[in-house]
Image 1 (cartoon, rainbow, N blue to C red):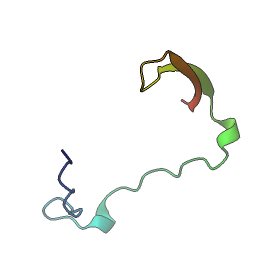
Image 2: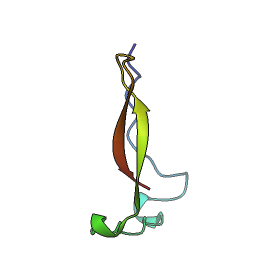
Image 3: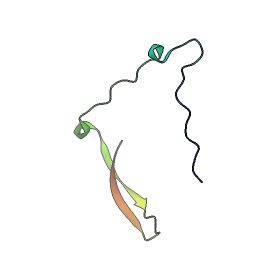
Length: 55
């Protein structure tokens, strides 16, 4: 079953989207982000795989 699509973004009453605070810019240098290795179960149930993820 698929989720219903999200409605278009609307600002709270009395505000416009331009009034809302902006998110801080994300760092573009991914090499400086910490990462760690985690074990994730395989979808077919045959053990685990090790993946690196940014934290």
